[in-house]
Image (cartoon, rainbow, N blue to C red):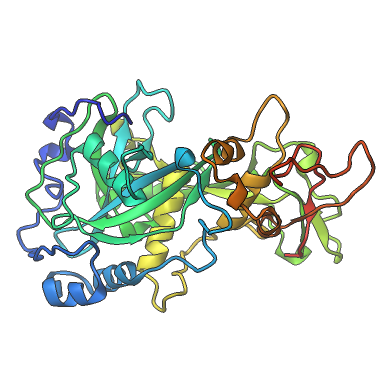
Length: 412
């Protein structure tokens, strides 16, 4: 979103007539002292917050998020810097509900936007030149879209999660914050955001609808799992465009698949005891909000993936291990986020469709810092010279060209 966009107060679109971010869940019984820290640490939470109003689950969630650091092998790395022009951020803004549970702010994108019109999303956008850090990007975008001030004493940082890759060749980093000031008022930028609402964070670990949905739509919930009724959580598997993988046939599950072709099916008989070669798939999740009758779309795709990961980090009973939802997050053989990002950088593209990530590396003078061998290793690929017409070709910068033959390195 452009930083020059005008911000307009639009109280008509606030949930149920509330006049502040926490109005949907009365905060009269929640008193959390403000902190001037750039980031809330676990000590800050114990020393500066009255945690008596929080549930034990919420206390653990905040402590885990405040203490969280991405794995050492997470991107970006010195040998694969991210070009700023392909970086984006979203703000995962949490607050405490009236019963001590944690909620996240979600918004409905305007129907006039060119991309993802009307979708349920988190505030966010691409990195601007004036942004010093990815946290600055997330805070600026949230201020422009919903009026959440970038004041770190009112909205301190909990953690920065690992980046996610999206098909538009963007690297999206979630920034998790906690809203402490319950007097803040939403100021919706009407050309971009038409509604603001909240959803329980813990509900992204469950296939059972939260109590708020059960109360609002009991008849639909009772229809349950008969295939025609209300299903709070569903998922679809999509073909990944990366190299095939060798999969243990006992782990293969025939899930509903989108955007597939006949070539993506198993090469071997799935009933065979021999390892089979399979086109990898990645899973897209969807969660209903209980507001669909009012025109709010479900939480889907990237937003759902970010919320699942945030909840898994927060509600983990034994960090650094992640909490386990009551549904399967990824199908067997699914590429990891790091693998998908590495493949996005080294993926061969036809001449008429340049790789925007590699192009940005060149434009920003970062191509010389990339260790392409390590990138390809993370992507799980090897290269073979199979003749002059199909042999391997590298550009002068060492990045892969369209002539590469990509195959899997490992068995899953």
